[in-house]
Length: 635
Image 1 (cartoon, rainbow, N blue to C red):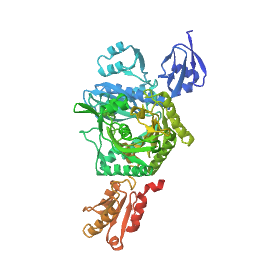
Image 2 (cartoon, rainbow, N blue to C red):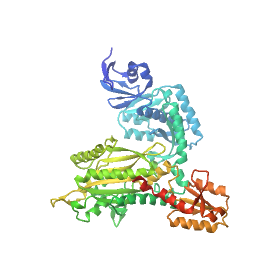
Image 3 (spheres, helix red, strand yellow):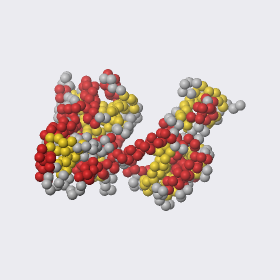
Image 4 (cartoon, rainbow, N blue to C red):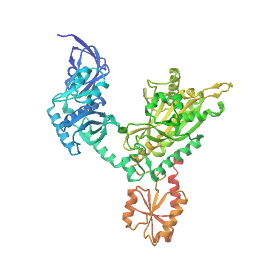
């Protein structure tokens, strides 16, 4: 009998097993049905596959195929199997892994693979799943692993970047470097679908070698897979990139990757979002400011962005001096505050800007309006005394609630604490985190804690909105900052006549206005509410010649009332014109014929409805004004 080791389970039960016992054997000791459900396990906090051998006393926790850890293992195993199947098509596997519910494999191909090749790849994967031959895991030194993969520079990169020992998975003649646990029972990875084959670049950087990517999604059971497929089909109908093109809202160009171009329709949406928030900020005594796009590198060194954010910034040289495009608005606001001497009576000072910022993102991570390289931020910085912190944060949360209520968004709150690279004194961080907790606890806000996810200069409250597809988007943020006032030597004169540091509250509600537009397009499926729709009404004459003066007069009248109106004077049939208005997702189609001209009415067809209603023009205008007055409905 070999040496014995003690395995401690989460419920504090202890099992005595022989040294070199596998995790699967431990699961069997717990129970045969338990072992069938086990996907992977953690040993002293480190995830392993079930073939991992236990060599010393340890704490073990098992995860099922339905757990996040088990699902990740299913998807990672499939990404490995995609690589094995793709090799038969004369490719060199570069990378594979998991991104949420999606798995992927990147490779360099002698001949470009087409969408039709996905069927052959899937067939090969299915054969491997049916055969259920185990994937063997071996450990190597970096030196030996580099020799093993001497003909694959991609795998050599992963070896050099990774830790020692290097784990190598072997399945038949195929081998690859891995960094996550795999599923030992391949029959458990059958609920998958290969989704796409597309172009990408090594390390997702456009400057690197061109590769191809096969991507798919997988779940623990067939029902979850079917539900996700239905979601994908639904999402394709409301994808903001598709809607942005169809509705002529925004576009992108190879001349400015990741930087959106807004057509008139898109600019209308941007301005309406700004104006709505501008009105609320005006009522809450915010002062709107404007700061330059480009500022001297010294400013960013003083602010701390140089040390913590340099890799995400764009630089240029003017007169042999280095300047940076601003990635954030806060340093500019600090400079404006510093222009004047302030008394304690002046605070709080609420400074707001719809500021355009630039942040470098790898080309492979760009995603429509959701991930761009320049975006407009509804930024505000509130300068307060310490005794004003909690009341001001409460007011900000109230403002955020008003804005999200306009769109009907449910939201959740998350408190993010200091990261490992935090700036400043730990005592100030403790005070700042406690201040945020006090507001949330004392006023009954439900929230979760996200450890170590704050920015480097202060703890924050993140607001996550939930869209019509059930997805969560982090948009709003409230951040407490003791560091910027120190960095910029900001002061106010307190009641004792002495200089004192203000505290800065960073606040955003939309976050990125561009990303928020993308969220709104998908949330509403392009059917934006009346106040936000780029074209609010389309006027259609029954006869373009006979009723031309009447529809032009109606358009002038409605535009004078502040509405956005278009005329359809084409020679197309009435049914076609109405369908076109529907496809353009215009809230109201107004039909004018002989009866309407004679009676001073208009035939109104509301978006999504098949019937027309005859309405007096004056009454219709009153109705429209009530519909667009969204702020009164949430106050």
